[in-house]
Image (cartoon, rainbow, N blue to C red):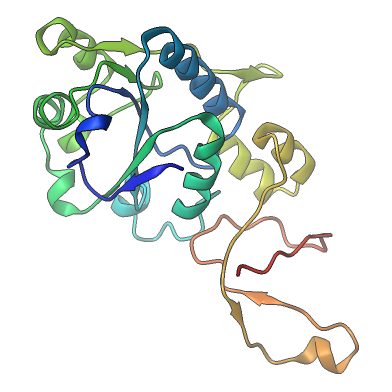
Length: 232
């Protein structure tokens, strides 16, 4: 069972772990490659795996007009992460105060003092801190001083394209559902609350299910065959 934290005050047993930082939206094949590598480190060094992600995603926080963007919500992420032998997840609320954190302070106060990170897994384009001032190079510059190692593997490519959440969003928006599902390594799913509509479909013999999709990316309008699971 994955332990879920809402802040960086983690239990002693989770300190000194392998830490992966990112939005991990959709947990696609590119993310899965990263987690499989982390699993090998976990086995080799006998360490636990922790994930830092943010809610809302920073891009959505800074762009209030960006409404339909997510591939997965926090609950879905945690459920998916449990398949990759993750021991704990930190979902930090991304607000104005946190966005002002200096990059070096993030390294010192959070990655070192709060978490005592041993390995830090990030992507090539990882940016952090106030005004996105921090990057992979800053993490590398401080490795020895704060006793951690940065792991920055090459991104996964398919058909000469980097597998990314942005690519999958684009595929969904343009109706390429099968291609998106292939990169996700599963069928894309949404989760929401059923809303009462005008019941027009029921009157003509085709009742529909209206779901509040909240911030999910909008797939291209059309008719799709779906499976519906009711949450208990």
